[in-house]
Length: 223
Image (cartoon, rainbow, N blue to C red; front, side, top):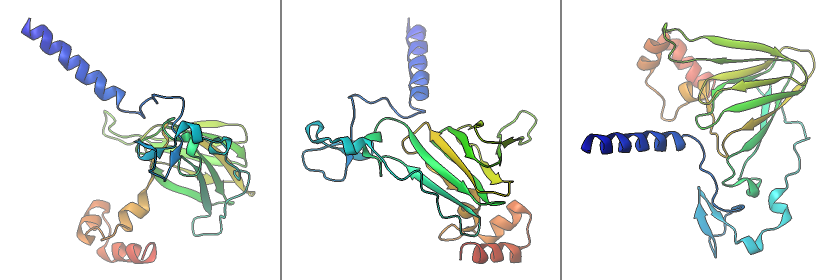
């Protein structure tokens, strides 16, 4: 009897961990986020507005048709729609982003620790790719695909990925995420732009680079 009970509890624990791997389901129709703590309930990182005070504006966002400014070093811009600027998204477990990439620009390698991303191309031609992890043969496989208008591509949760515009005209994509707060870790910035900086010795050994190059990258890219 004791063994059966142990097995049952172990299964409960396993399925509980699986259930917590994504945003939890909401327990009410909506929980519109607000920064005002008065007469509000704190849920999922934001205060919930009193349902009687909720307005149609809480579920409406304008401006995603406006191109992002790609006049920067990498030639890309991401406009995010989250519970921070669309309060009605709070606790619903989804969010959006518009990705603008100038000709030959790149949305640099990054990953979202809390969400899978579904990318839909609206204009232009992208090369999109992600890299696997923990393969049985020890390798990290690159999955890359040229995408044109109307194409859809998946970036699995937590995997490093990027998009680059391989065309001669601006490219635009719309991404949907399976979390209201997917998070974003930009690979180069996190590694070479950390504050305080990661040890030059650690980075030079990890990337097999001359320490002078590491120092240059830390200063040139993010200093």
